[in-house]
Each structure stands twice: as structure tokens, then as C-alpha cells.
Image (cartoon, rainbow, N blue to C red; front, side, top):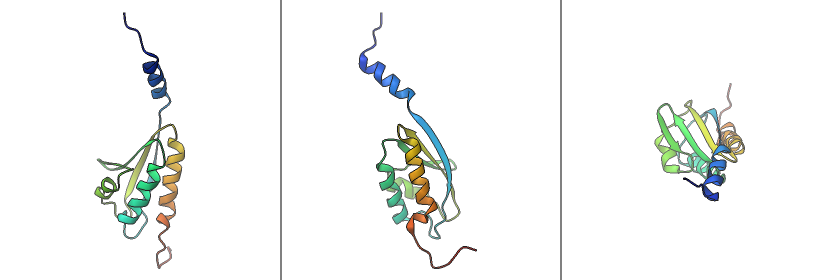
Length: 113
């Protein structure tokens, strides 16, 4: 006879609520995902409860770790998939997507044609 503890029932229910969402982003910064934008990205990711990962082909990096983000060596034009899993996954994904769309607030000296 197996009895489930209230904690295991709660944990199982919480597991059902874990939503995973993903979105493709493009690194548009001329210098790529270098230290400054990687730091901004990791700081933003750490604001959320959800697990955040960035995927570049077969390489996966923890979005909350600047060092792992830098290992992606994402140059300008690189397509990445951002994955978020957790209770605030959609909100986290929107916030991170906004960083990419705003070029991490880096203002380049030329205009796009």
C-alpha cells in the first residue's frame, strides 16, 4: 500500500502547471551577444521564476548565467531559440524577446537600410 504525502501531491500538481514556451530571436547587434548584452540578458532572466534557456543549434545555455550565454558565441545574424519553463514563462519570454528587439539598447552609428 502506497500513500502519497500532501507534499508529493502538491509537487505533482505544480508540475502540471509548468508551461514551456519558446520563441526564435535573432542577434542583431553588430558585435553579437558580447559581454554587455549577455549580462543584461542574464539579469533579466534572473528576475523570473521560470527556467530560461537559449539554444544555438545543438548548444544549450542557461539564460541566467552570463558565462554560459557567452559560450554560445552568437555573432550578428545568429538565430537562437529562447525557451522558458515555469509559472511566468510567457512574461519572461516577452521580456527577453524585447531585449533582442531593442538591440539591448545599444545604439549603433549607422541606420539599417
